Image 1 (tube, helix red, strand yellow):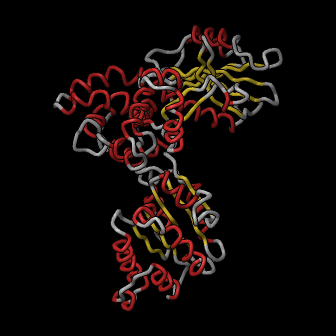
Image 2: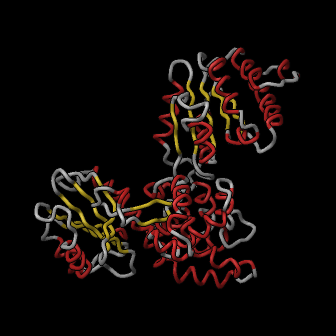
Image 3: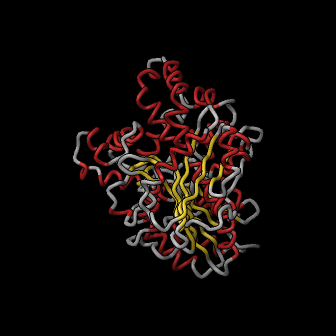
Amino acid sequence: MKQFVDRQQEMETLQSEYERNGSALVVLYGRRRVGKTTLISEFIRDKNALFFLASEESEAQNRAAFKEKAAEFIDSDLLRNADVKSWDVIFKSIMDAKHDSKPVIVLDEFQYLGKAEPAFPSIFQRIWEEILKKQSVMVILCGSLISMMESQTLAYGSPLYGRRTAQIRLKQIPFAYYHEFFPGKTRRELIELYSVTGGVPKYIELFSESGDIYRAIQKCVLNRSGYLYDEPHFLLQQEVSEVGSYFSIIKAIAAGNHKLSSIASVLEVKSTNLTKYLKTLMDLDILERRVPVTEENPEKSKRGLYKIKDNYLRFWFAFIYPNMSFIESGHSGIVMDKIRKGLTTSHIGFVYEDICEERMWELNVNNTWPFQFSKLGGYWDAKNEIDIAALDPEGKNLILGECKYWKEPVGLNVLHALEAKAGDVAWERDRRKVWYVLFSISGFSDELRNHAATRDDLLLIDDGGR
């Protein structure tokens, strides 16, 4: 498997900061397993770099470990043998040493330093101002606890607020790059793999060694000794205190309850009691609140739906969490049967809509239409749901589309149903031009293809042929 894929923009940002005259302070953060350390390792490969991985030990133990790393970095027996009681001495020793090129200092899992000693962000602020800021040096503060990294380095109340010269929140790798991880796989196979691994490099690495999607799930997820089996617990317990409450909410959404009122009903609580939890899950990039793309005031819209953004969590809460008793009692075969029966209809079909949205942006920048839309999402009202809806408010253009992850080719009936739904979309009803796009993993009927050849407002995307 190709190890380093995408990340071009992030590498350019890091390189630009490195080439900056004087000092640079970069905050790099993102969820676990998303590839932060791999990105940094690639970046510092040819540079004069000190890489320090903080641990959950005490501040004194971390300081002693950092002193050893620093002494090795500048090859100083004096520092190596010194009894150092402050971080300032170590950083001053690094900057007083002679460097042939700009030094890069990486503090990975930075949040653990602040966890062990709440005053550490203030300590580091002083070090930055007094020792580092006026020197030719690049410092990267990297962390995987999103809430803690934000409070310690980015929040207005943080001592380090306003000191950074750049920040990077590393996200999952988009589906568009999956063919680089899995050369030779069909597009259908790539979609299946993405539907579970969700662009997280560590998951991709595991699945790349395990054959098809079902063998990979059996080996990597249903294996009680593998870390993916209990990964969501691990991810959430680091970020929040009431893991059970958050699990209940995510499980309710994974079961198909997307409205605030229906989530509250399933959990038998008041809707107002859920607001805090939902906001935290959105801040952690686990959930998103979506509204019809035509809504003018999204924040105030009563049509908001909550959706799990993370593909692996969506899969785990739909198939693993509700069936853990089977797995724990040694009957994972029952769970595997449920996954084989429901994966395509209950999971991959919805992930495919996200992939089609990603593709819509590609089509947009490639001038597929005689205009460019500025808003993209879905549309729904009391009786209809449309997978793809894109708006070009200036030119009064509306694109509507459906995404079909079916075994059979899509026929003319799907287009007719979409055209009927279009009549119920109120946006610019009397002044707009409507365009249609259909995505299909299994191609299209000859009848629909022949019909599309007579129209300039209909685009067919055959995903089975890529």
